[in-house]
Amino acid sequence: MKIFRSLISILIACSVGAGSALTASAVFAAENNGSYTYDSIFETESKVGAVSAEIDGQPVETADETPFNVFDIYDAHQSYAKSHSGDKSYMYKKSEGIDVSHWQGDIDWEQVGRSGIDYVIVNAGYGKELYQKDPKFDENMRGAQSVGLDCGAYWYSYALSVEDAYKEAEVCYEVIKDYDFKYPIYFDIEDPSQKRLSTAEVSAIIEAFCSTLEAKGYYVGIYSFANFLTTRVYEETLEKYDIWVAHFKVEAPSYFKDYGMWQYTSESRIDGINGDIDRDHCYINYPYIISPDTYVFDGTESGNCDSLFPVSVNKGVACGIDVSVWQGEIDWEQVGKSGIDYAMIRAGYGNLSTQKDKYFDDNIAGAEKAGLDYGIYWYSYADSPEDAALEAEACYEVIKDHRFTYPIYFDIEDQSLADLSKKELTDIVKAFCSVLEEKGYYVGIKSYANFLNTRLDESVYAKYDVWVAHYGVSRPAFKKGYNMWQFASDAKIDGINGTVNCNYAYLNFPSVMNEAHLNGF
Image (cartoon, rainbow, N blue to C red; front, side, top):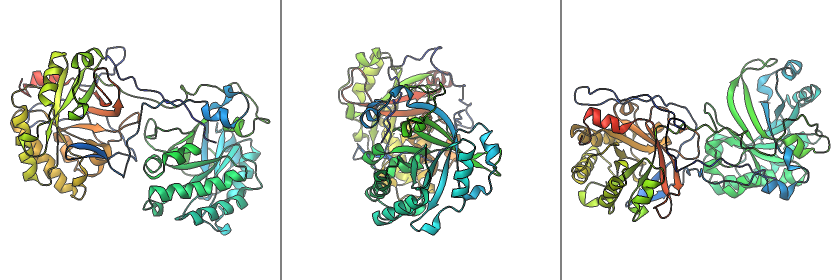
């Protein structure tokens, strides 16, 4: 019973101008005792990140977190047409809701009903025993429905096996069977005990619960945090059921598959409820889909969802790509005509200058001939500060005869570094960056948001610029400042066979290099 929505495709061939770009403040700080300090206006908080790696210079994905695909465009009506009758013109509607449990205590539903809330998702219980029914479930259901609020329900899971999930579904059914629902019954899978389970185990548990209630005639969905949904559940499972995604303090959830509801805060206040309450945006017209015969139209229904779902992307001052040997031979003349402003070119990897990227010289010459600005990055395998210093020297030998209008980035993300401590990784970053900084280069750090948030000491972000990778979100989930964002890994650009990474820059780097006489200027 999955309802698909159209995802908005990000325009790759973007020519940044006054009418389309948000210009970042000049954030380059003056030289201070031979070093440079970087800052940025772009900050956010999030619960998700992504991790990627290379092996012997080849890119691979890790098993922990999977990057998102921002270029898939789903048919908003396909699944609906297959599984529902009725007019598709009414399947979308923006509604505001809350979710409640016994933790909210006694609720004055008369006040809640006057607060502008459209619906309530009520906790039915947890676990696999009937006594684990939420003690306020009946009271909350009767109270919400008495003031005209549409209701759904959720069941908090502790299931660690398929057998547990079947039992939870049967108990949930016993609790909810005497009520009518206009919103889905959600399987809430987020408990810390379940995070040690494999993707296969989690997906099987979800299937067991959801298929049991679906067979009993219920419209069923899955609830969890964005990170859990994208890293612990098979895509085939996500596609079968509607999604209620939780992600707080962001402009849009970092879940770029289909979802119908977004829990966007846990700190709201509503008349009639003491203390904080979860708030939710809903984009699917569930009351119409679930009960079309009794649905009352109010004129806010729509057959198009594009304007409903949150999309807010700051495209900065320039749009670029990053390339390496894996893109093969590039027709830079075509790339130059595609609307791309700059290129980040891999110079090499490891601690030997002989590990120079095979196409480095060709890519530099091609980008320059096409009139593109460019910078470079060096992929690291360093497991000690000493090794990082050797990598910096190797990088210098490769790049020393060129000038760069964009930074020199230290790309630290390889899975071989997973066992190193935060201090060890921070010392490695400082060792590489300080060597090249002393040689007059504008140096930065490149990695995925999760790595940057959790594996490095924050002191490095005050000293060096950041290039953050995070796909499928309206804003990367990096908690500090950044001046470049790798927002996609599978763009199609004229002149390049296959896919390529795309980036937004938020600082006028060419002006910085010229004015500060860095990177060979």
